Amino acid sequence: MNEFWLLFGMAVATMATRIPVLITLSRRELPSGVRRGLHYVPPAVLAAIIAPIVLLDEGKPYLALDNAMLVASLIAVLISWRTKNLLLTIVVGMAAFLAWRALF
Image (cartoon, rainbow, N blue to C red):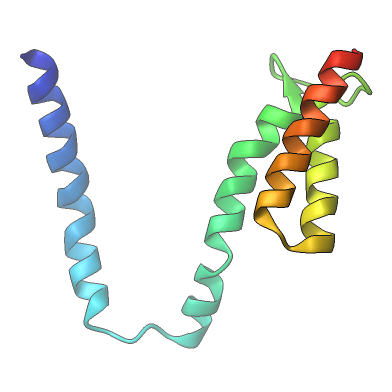
């Protein structure tokens, strides 16, 4: 039962900090510079999550040829850049990761 109250309290705290801002901003038109800048938030957050997983091993840089995540990520970036196809990028990236891992 304590877990329920813990999750409930976390949900209330999260919503209490976000809802007032969303309500306030929903009634206003954001300046064009802010709107332009907000377009960069999702790629920046995604890069901040993925880069340490791909480039680090136990907190140290891991830029070796046997780093399957690095090789698969580079292939996925190349496929994404050339085709702009999300499904193809995911499938080829996963295949590259599994194949590279099997080789090393």
